[in-house]
Image (cartoon, rainbow, N blue to C red; front, side):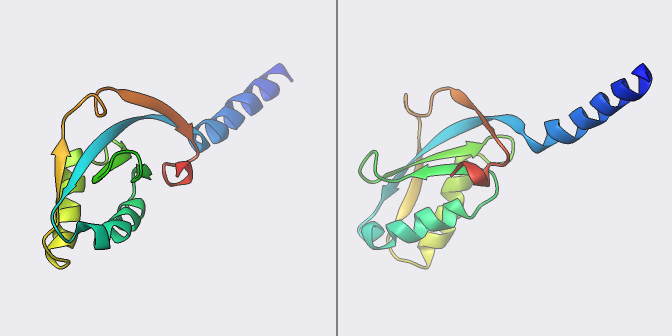
Length: 119
């Protein structure tokens, strides 16, 4: 009987733990530079939010910057800037540049069912 209870506990842990993962998020600070950026700002935010591994995009904290909380093993700040720059080519004189600053220093631990649900 004890063996059955122990086995049930082990099996329930195998089901519950993967459903609620904990992962470290990195914050990428992207400066948005160019004359045409304001008209494409919302489109850039929406495009980033659709990517896997993106937990949150903050566009209203620092003017002309995007703060992107992302799953660092899946995405890098440089990849995010490149993604936006590929979008911006078709949208005019606007580009994203990775900023290294105190905003990007360190990481946070975030617990959620998935990165997308953390938005």
